[in-house]
Image (cartoon, rainbow, N blue to C red; front, side, top):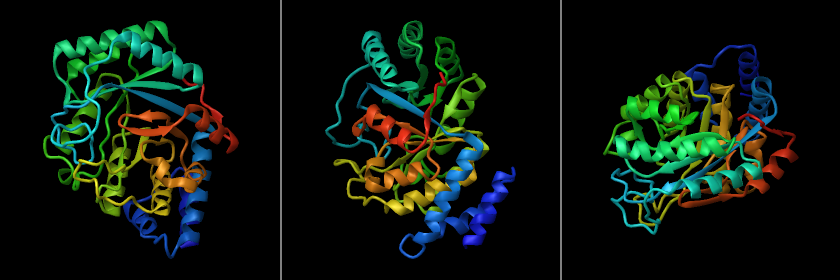
Length: 331
């Protein structure tokens, strides 16, 4: 297996792609039996990252700009109106509050800033106008790279976001096509694909990833990676389920840290030139968080994430600089 991993690494660095079958061989490694091979896989993932992406590290932040009362029944989410949780409920923020936070995180060293709103999607002219007014205000007063995360999009809403100054649209696949209806029934996997395509057609970059630990199989995790590759996604947030009281997944046990480290490395093997982004739930890794940084990760969502707590910009900067990265100056 060690020779197989080494040969795959060389193949990728020489511009070739690995097959689904190759990836299945890698993900079959058992953390309890094959820890040495998984650490080797992680080491080679880091070499692939350095070969294709260099040592730049990108930090992004988000603002929970509208919270709760979501019509969708995503089984992991505290903001769904279908479940009784302690998540805060409030309407859309105003442009001055958004600007204050954007300026603050920009001064601290974040590269990107996104407004995130609860709800199925951006369908009405009224809500589109309210949001684009905020983004125009942010663009006029702060140099930070603007991202947006507002659920499903229409062609018109995507184009309006682009014109307002938004550069990147965030919309996760969450899991594989085959598993999706096990976590949500109020919209489909194809709805998510369609939104990504609409955003790309409007000229927006797309940030899309998913959540590990939803009850999906290892094959499902690979299927999502190859779907993202097919969609040419270059910013991929990797979330690890935080079981939230009141949701149907409240009793789910977190995946083993080495299972996650292995999966991160395999994503780097599959999509070698992407920003693989630590996102929600990464603090579950504990001491293994550094191993992810050493094994393919080259970006992070930092600060507080929606209804769960993340880490601080200063602590993340310290961590990645210590590991030999330079902070990305990209705007």
